[in-house]
Length: 87
Image 1: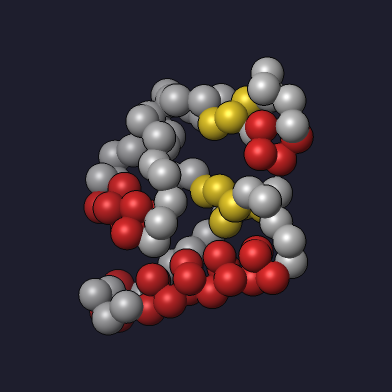
Image 2: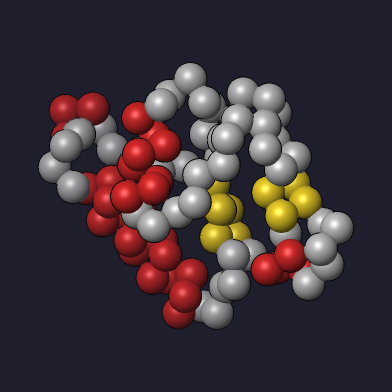
């Protein structure tokens, strides 16, 4: 299990596909390393990030919705609860 802490592209480079390439590379590295779970979190007041991560193949939960950790721990009761304004 691993978390994407920061994925940033300089504002004057937005819309050129660099962010999607960084995200694809993170997923590729995770798979190569045998990770069974890769996640990230973002402030829900940045709605453009929902579409960005969804287009990268991630499931984006509603703000404050718990993230089940079953894939990482094998325990159905394990979950991570974000702040109410985090997705």
